[in-house]
Amino acid sequence: MNISLLQKSRYGYKPILPRALSGDLGTLKTVTGEATESVANQNEMKQLFPISYGKPIVTFEPGEGSVTSRALKVGVILSGGQAPGGHNVIAGLYDGLKKCNPESKLFGFLGGPSGILDDKAIELSDGYVDQYRNTGGFDIIGSGRTKLETEEQFARCAEVCKARGIEAIVIIGGDDSNTNAAVLAEYFARQKHDLSVIGVPKTIDGDLKNEQIEVSFGFDTATKTYSELIGNIERDANSAKKYWHFIKLMGRSASHICLECALQTHPSIALISEEVEEKGMTLNEIVNQIVDVVVTRSKEGEDFGVALVPEGLIEFVPEMKHLIEELNDLLAHHEEHFSTLRTFEDQSEWVNKNLSRDSSYVFSSLPNNIQRQLLMDRDPHGNVQVSRIETEQLLIEMVADKLEEMKHDGKYAGKFSTQHHFFGYEGRCAFPSNFDTNYCYALGFNAAVLIRESLSGYISSIRNLGQPASQWVAGGIPLTMMMNMELRHGEMKPVIKKALVDLSGAPFRTFVAHRDEWAVKTSFTYPGAIQYYGPDEVCNMPTISLSLEAGK
Ligand code: FBP
Image (tube, rainbow, N blue to C red; front, side, top):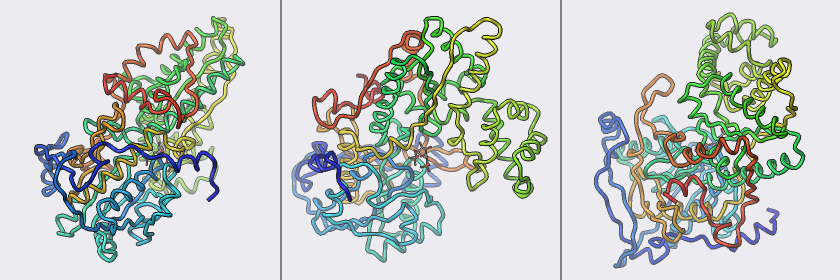
């Protein structure tokens, strides 16, 4: 591995652990809370998880006594999209296991959940883990998007673990992977396999969050990375004063990333999908809203600006949502016939004939390239890949058309030159911020202690994150507590509730209080690059969303 100077220097960083985990683990006290309930559908959940349901929250505190740990053999899996800090979860887990007992062993399943099914794993060693400490990426063992969800897969997991003498699996993943971790834990318990499952909350999207999980790891670094880039573009826009930049931001359905970046950079426009849905805004209404800002700024001589667009926006626009649902249905039911249509013209003609009147109207009114994306970019199940649709370009084209009309009617005399960007992959493997470096190490270390305590069906939890790392609180949350029943592929399933932006929450309210001013008066803020060294307020601050949620 070629090593940059920053990487070399980051090897020397010592992550800060919560007080309970930083001392002698032999004296650690486990405080057990009351029995818990799931967030909703308690009866169904009780039936589906007869063994795991109702387990208490546990918290670790420094105590007295001297517990000696047996040697533990653990397997770890990275699941889904990369998020900065994953390497530190594994480093923390490794160190935690070794601290419990130096004879403990950690196996990394390779390439994501498929690694366990194919029994592909490496045993992690001091030298190997050391190369990845405090670095971004998931390349330590690789990740993948295979889902562990069938009983055959669960049985295979048990078989592989038993053959290797593994007694616990740590699954580092988002809401889906942690949902599957809960089902797997219940399966192991029901089958009386002596195997436990611990989840770790990962995703840059920030949508694995609730009363118990303050933030998923990676969100802090990813939003700081995007905010740096947005700030740089803002400064460029303000210098040349000739472009409107439309920036699409990753984050799947939820707009947490877009909202946090808006709070950090004060753009001229930031759209929040959850608000669009609540207000039932049509695409035209969104376009008109943008046009208003462009025209107002133009009157002040400011023919430039920055607009942030969340990746999932299109799914929240009512008429687009219907169109996408109809297209998914149509293409799934007529896959064979559709594949015989060779040209885009034939495909769109057939689609137009078979869509409802309303959806056909919406489809025809979309620019050609977006129509193509809707028909071409489909996932293996035939569904439209919403994240691949270039929403930022769609908006640019529609805004430009509207401004042309206004110009023609003498209502607008400005210039609308645009640039478009998509920020996503740039932020997923950055060197973790100090926050994520500490948080991830603590999450992993804490997972080792949960395993030592023979807990299963828990997610590793580090709380009180608005405070300095040494005051963070370590423990475990039963996965069933965060679950409810939802319709998935036509069936009611137990799942961890995904957190969308809370429109009554402090981050969104703060944004609303300022956005009108940011729209007309250039208020760009330039956060600059993530700082790893220096004063506390530049290198150890959590995100603005987290601080606001913590009441700061
Ligand atoms: P996870 O939910 O697995 O953490 O993935 C997050 C994410 O980065 C989304 O924001 C994005 O839509 C998606 O992954 C992209 O997936 P891929 O890496 O497969 O292109």
